[in-house]
Image (cartoon, rainbow, N blue to C red):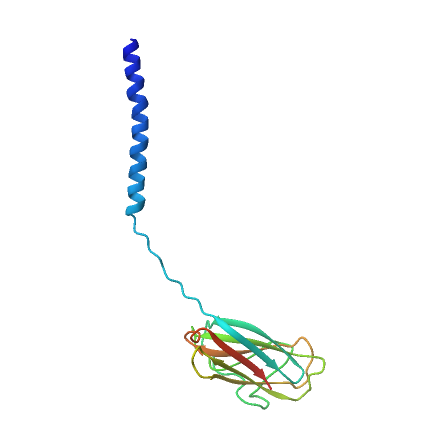
Length: 174
């Protein structure tokens, strides 16, 4: 019985090691045989941005987003009924916007010293890498009676995609 027990432990002890090695070789072949796909990701870059706000207004760049719906232009000229005026409810002055396009947004607020009955032009220009300066249009905002806490979002349609990176942009309120 001694030889039988020794033979039994030899084969079953070696069998588990053999089985383990066989599984390792199989997994190695499986991993190296799998297709590994690298998916390129592109990023857009803004090399510089400038917000130039005058006439006792405050402005804050709200960044870029994709338009969820199509909007007609609002704030198309100075004058009651055509400019977007500061009021208790937040307003939006925008160029014509197409659903799915990239939008640049600037939030403008009056300060304690903002003059009443005034109209301002808000303009956006950008320059793509190696390209010339392009205007994204202008919108017109105004006050009847300005008070702090009022807000107008000025939105500009840049088209289906951002300009060729890196690009610069400038928003001016004058």
